[in-house]
Length: 207
Image 1 (tube, helix red, strand yellow):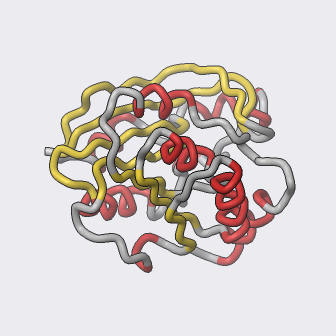
Image 2: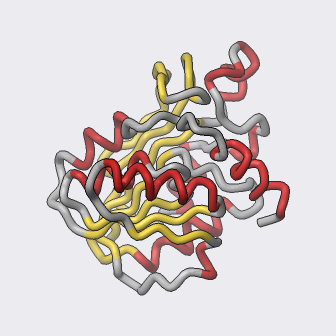
Image 3: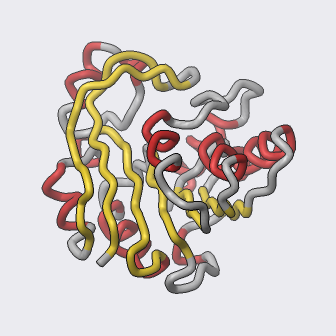
């Protein structure tokens, strides 16, 4: 990951305000309520809103991001909510997660650079136990048209960093998709996710 990418996210997370708010993502919240608690990993977790929510629900929450500024705010949010989260700063290949360590992985707007996004998905697989669950929400390729109409909705501005159902099914080929859909939703998450957007949501179980 280059310095420009890291600096971009450190800049975004360096303000007092939480860029995407302090409340959890709605889809994540819905799905966690259906699952027994266990160990969950949040890649690209930013300022910690989702990991902190999971910890409040009784999960053992792990997270990573390239942004030290994001981690600082996540740890403050955890302290405010009287929970602990295990949050590391770095890229996945540098971290010390163990094969089969997690019962669930939540990819919530984890938009990695286009050149590496599929390889990260495939690398994450080994850290999820058999029958473990992936929860996913991120912008679809159609979202590029929504950004053109309203930049406040947020999301990557290059279509290759966005997702299609086909590529996600390829990335997670050894999973049974319990549900998967591309849909239009209304976002109201902090300063940078506001308005109508196109997303893909899925829940999948590792075979």
